[in-house]
Image (cartoon, rainbow, N blue to C red):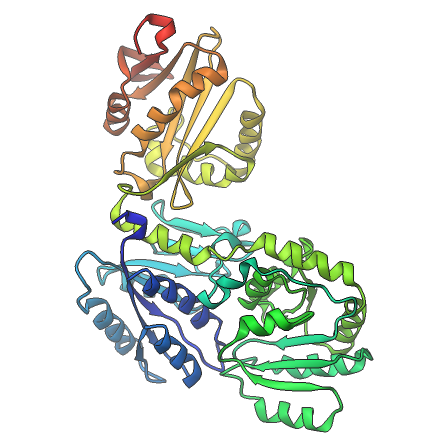
Length: 518
């Protein structure tokens, strides 16, 4: 079985309560659904107050271990340890997934000590350190976060890793018609909505003066305000239909001309479905999502559910067909629905190595700058560099931009499971006949032969692109991994040399036209 398709065994620690909402649980459920669909298994260790959510997990083939309310930390960790220790089918790779704001470095360290690999889902970079094999932040502002992680941690950042439940995926090819005037409004303020933002939204819609045909209100499974919302609907003429939030969400989104939603995980579902949306910042950590989507033209942001602000925005968008059409297009550009697949591929690859995976070789792009910096600043890379000092972000970005634009430089990357795993750079030397090589492999992907592979795949192309007849790599003596990579890639040892005060070994390859042999 290919490594990225290797069967996984997930143990998920995420809650769904009136206090924390249902977003953590639901996005992990999307990952678990994908895992089970690929022949793996998933177990939730959870405090879940919603029978509807528990039923959804069961329907997806996910096992649930209930965590009693108020259980002390040692009891919680023991239940998690028991789930991790439960025998999995042979050849399944065991991962623990942590999604919640309270799982700090101490908790993460305790989980890693259980012997499983770990993935942490995070939105805010608020912990002083992260102890994980993989860290996932699916939000727009993820690349702006400074994550204090170990060099071997794989960072999955941005909306290409957004976790959508499988029920949404068939809708990715559906065409949307855009009504001249919005007559159908969907309101969904999350699984819990502890601050009852929903009431402010309803009051704003009523105050807008727009004659909507129907307003469908999704009441989340952990929402404690259902009775007061029912009373408000009964007392007002607004045509509101109350619906439980347990299922059929894609159909509700497909129905809507306009949505008003909390700016959490539902934002990515609306974007994928192409629904124009007003995103309410229901919690401080959601502000980056709402404002980022507004900046990209995929939604409009509201700092809160102030009825006057809601009314003004609803009036503006209800009659603006072109604005709503453009928002739907921009949303679908942001989220393609393959996030869970990409994440599972990464977990499988890290568990099984590169063998059997499809390597993607491509030219480096401007968006790879931060991946290059993370690889370059890995202590293992710096220890074998001529200048061992860490590289500053500002100077790196300036250098990287110059290199990409230079006709004397060619840079390639290897992606493994959608993650930049290795990079190589060729610089034409002053003699105009030779290009000098610099390459590095991300620490999480070392031992997979990627150094050898990227040299094999690119050295001839570098000669053609740069118009040179040979390439040359210089390795500091003692860097046995690089020596082996050059040797396995068919490079000839060109003898010992000295560079920047270091004793080194040089390796060369020449085009057949230049010397008669490859």
